[in-house]
Length: 367
Ligand code: F6R
Ligand code: MG
Ligand code: MG
Image (cartoon, rainbow, N blue to C red; front, side, top):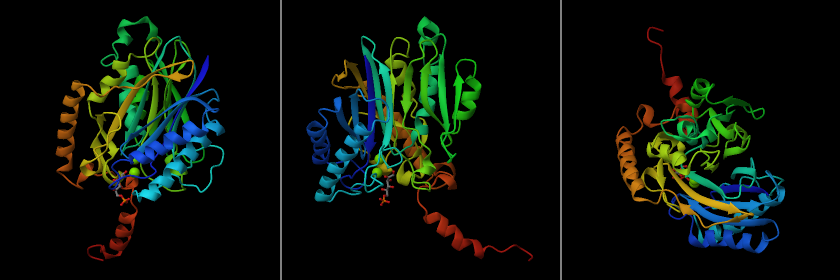
């Protein structure tokens, strides 16, 4: 049976700054889909990560379905009405257009979707991150799919011996989607050379070379295209199929114990370690640190199980303590050097004005 799994997420307003949406807002989004989506989707699940509300759908309409995208958009509009009523901060902030047209891509919300032929049992992981961008998934995906130091199945299981195909997007290119397909294991060094730059070369999807099936999809987009200018970090979602021809759940999760430094954090303009958090976690310290939640599901004939909260385990408390230490250490150097992002990645335009004002004050000595 063919099933499409779609996750569509947006920041439509939060309590106390950019901390988390209100319970009423989340309830309204879920109610809207319950009332209006019965004939459109098989099933759905609503959660939040930091200030972002994510709707996970299963349905039969394929990737990029207007009916499903409109349902998500309208649910976010309904949630925005509550955000306005409650005076939440940034009400409707990710709904960049006044009216829905065809597809939410480029209209503000982030989207990751895959159409799959359901296996008899179909486990998958849904990741949602806040205060960072899609490049945050580059390293964990590389390690989980291509490095036997993290994926023991690459040594132990015949299922993955043919490797995977990585589809990587050059997100700086604005004219269209500029993509490259590279294979593991033979192109490993080329993949690493690209993924080194999380702000430019970003994994869009991964396919099994053994079966040809899609394994992972990330909400990767051309950043500059959204509003004709750089609009900042776009709090990415991702779907990953696991087990069998794909890495085991624990192999995909393992690299998240690094708490690697990513772009985002306060004002989308800093470097911070990515903290694996429990489902429905807020952000806090310095509007962060960047967080990622992982909800594990099985889907059967389009029906979802309840989520298993993958980072809700004593092991990850230990990781969270280490990541807090990494965040604190880097924050001690404030704006200096790599603690803040390079000029081109700063989310706020104020610094551009500042530099313009300072420029004429420079004098060349001796002239
Ligand atoms: C980063 C983020 C926050 C805000 C910051 C200032 O993604 O959401 O760090 O950038 O709280 O918010 P504004 O500009 O809305 O006052
Ligand atoms: Mg926000
Ligand atoms: Mg956010």
